[in-house]
Image (cartoon, rainbow, N blue to C red; front, side, top):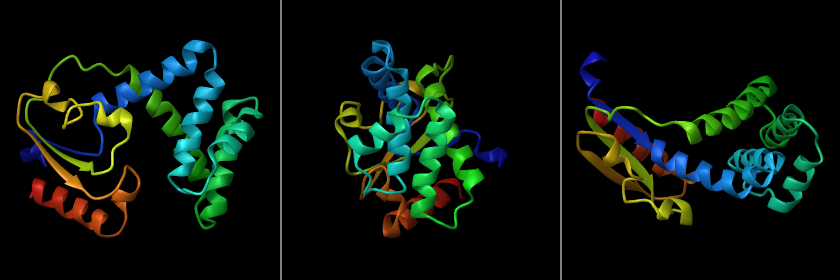
Amino acid sequence: NKDNLDRMCMVDGSYCYTKVRVQIYQERFAAAGKEDLYHAEKLFHYARSFDPTLYHDETIEKLMALPTINEKVDYTASLITSKIPDADRDHVVWSALSFVNLTHAGGKYDPQVKFNGDVCMVMASERDWISGSDSDDYGQQSQCDGKVEVNVTQGNHVTIWEGESGATIANRVASYFA
């Protein structure tokens, strides 16, 4: 809608949040010559959003045993489709690889201009130590000329999409752009 070009809505994240998170992981893994571990960590967290029962060390060990990123992505897709059997495997592979690529791009993104409008942010009430170190708006106010409105929804980065919290997000976004 052309009338909404001066408004944006973000759900539990922002460019600033993604960049800080990716930089921390890059410093921890990629800078130490552990690029494979860096990809394994990203894929583990992606798969865990579909199956919260996955064990970190066991999954990372299995991912690290695979020599290429495509094999790691394929294994991740297997984990997800074993939990959600009716999921389209090709789509799951594509989305897992997209997640790897988008997080990589997000870590490098550096906007050259501020957003010229208002931002509605919907944030999870449960934040980890990385997101907790950011300001109350994930640093977004420094990236826009307008007002940043923060709405907190019960849950964490994954569970806010479920049940009543998911409905709250849908209603908030719809009313923001109405």
